[in-house]
Image (tube, rainbow, N blue to C red; front, side):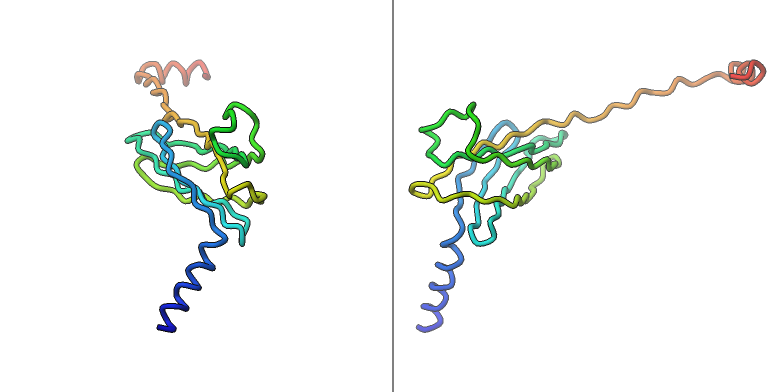
Length: 141
């Protein structure tokens, strides 16, 4: 009985300082985020569902209100640069050191921006014939 009560108290202490916010899908990027008040750290869990292109998580904007009370085109109360890449069909845990002041009711609204990274395409090098190579040596090119 004492072990169960101790386990519940420890669980409450660990969860009392962490706020978890809902899962959001934006194109190929699915994210959830939480804030740990003890370590002043935002943890973002990102999943890229695109089969061949990487995504770059660029920034997170956070408002200290419910999402229904704000315009996401406005500047957030806090904006943090992230610039981390999430590879195709993979998960990534991203941490950001941040201080978020307490909000009314513990509600925060966020917008996580990302960019699709286009694969780099290399141009094929034109091959020279043997006679062209000989002419280049004679001329000095």
